[in-house]
Image (cartoon, rainbow, N blue to C red; front, side, top):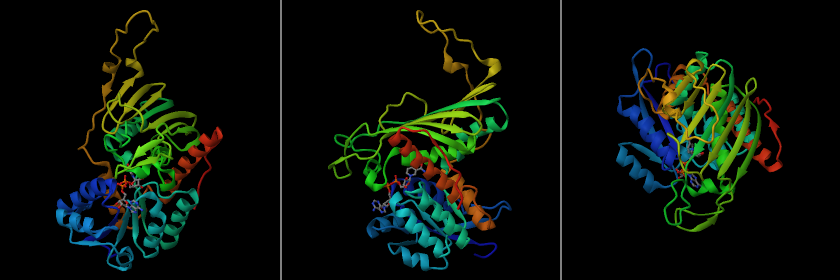
Length: 385
Ligand SMILES: NC(=O)c1ccc[n+]([C@@H]2O[C@H](COP(=O)([O-])OP(=O)(O)OC[C@H]3O[C@@H](n4cnc5c(N)ncnc54)[C@H](O)[C@@H]3O)[C@@H](O)[C@H]2O)c1
């Protein structure tokens, strides 16, 4: 790539899927393209040229026409062999990822990819090794860390608001319809272990980088997974056996003695303000963050409830928290990370959320499943590639 490229050519695979289409193509790449390109620190702009990749020519042609994209192809190898293509992005089903990413790196492409990066820790680590060998820049989606709610939570940590942090409690989930009378709002492969599904595999890689990025490295895990709903109906209305876990209850030991508990479930109904919320409690303050909002309560304004089951509660606990302001324009987390990754590619420097970080996420999911199967608490070994 020239030192000051005028444009970046980005091959996007899996753009007919839920994440690939909405978050990566429309809200990130096309949004940046339509604003005149990626803005660099010196105020100049680099144009983005997407190339849509996939298996279904009809769907790709339709997508390209609807969004004014000039190039699409079902021949991934031909696009990878094209030296003018700078970046390969992957949002395919997880099971297809390692092979595609490895081939793209061997073809000299920089990589940006959805999580989980692989189905096994060994494969996830092999990606880090190939990235090192080929010298390409690699980035793994860590979208939650870029969202306003978690940015504010991290700011409170950096400012020392919490004092000594004691614990984190996270609640993620919503009701995913079984698909019989109402269509499911997630793809059916998510509920089949043999197709790379399961909520532990899906969410523990997020929890790894969220915990690591806000509180510190995860040192041990104790988890219990469950398949609460054993039968579901797929996109064609056919009944199938749900072989993957649809709920995972985890305890994570983080940093220097912080205990984090996170429930992940596709079988709960929401009585929360957001679909995921984290409460952090420390000696000097507490905060609750969702994807967008964050509220805080300092020690000096902490009420003193007294347990009395004989009388109805008179305090309105939710009103006792202070809204933490954004102090910045709202962002889409996926787009924010794309922009950072693209600037890293242009500057020729590593992206901070790389394949090793991705592998730690895959490892936490694998250990979570092992902990559940064996009933044991498992320490998290340090990884290197
Ligand atoms: N970052 C996040 O918050 C987040 C959220 C959901 C999913 N994801 C990840 O994104 C990836 C895609 O998930 P999704 O929910 O968009 O799935 P999806 O089923 O909607 O899309 C899958 C894409 O892969 C393609 N594909 C390639 N080979 C396939 C095969 N053999 N069977 C089925 N589809 C195949 C499909 O055509 C489609 O473009 C997954 O790896 C998932 O873990 C990330």
